[in-house]
Amino acid sequence: MSSSWYPRAETAADLAAVEAVNLRAFGRPDEAAIVSRLRRDPVAWLPGLSYVATTATGEVVAHALLTRCHVDDAPVLALGPCAVLPEYQRSGAGGAVVRAVLDAGRAAGEHTVVVLGHAEYYPRFGFRTATTFGIHSQYDGPYFMALGLVPDRPLPRGTIRYPAAWQQ
Image (cartoon, rainbow, N blue to C red; front, side, top):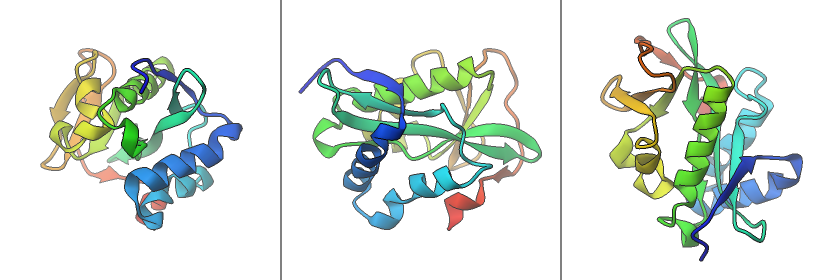
């Protein structure tokens, strides 16, 4: 197994590999299908904010994406399903792809990412690792965490509204 990961923006050529990673990581077609539903939702899908992590040989082993949601009326990002092939879980691939997609969100001028769950909920997908790399975290409710991508910027509070693609 590689200890070096190569995160990069997803391309159209990665679609089948991303679907395979999601299916193997989540195990149920209905869970894995959420990424495909997000791609079809013009409000939820944000081109350039879907990332993969590959091995040195180019094999896609992990996937993470950011999608649009709202806290009350404020547009923010949501960390979408993060998936790592089972044989690569706990290898750093998940952390690498999550850090890369959060950095891409920051570079795109975004300031907040909402996450369903919490740092202890996501250890196999690299989330705990991601929170130690310049991401400031704060709970915004018992099952949500808001990550500030910009230091010292207040995090929004209110009702989190996900796009319809999450709930189908």
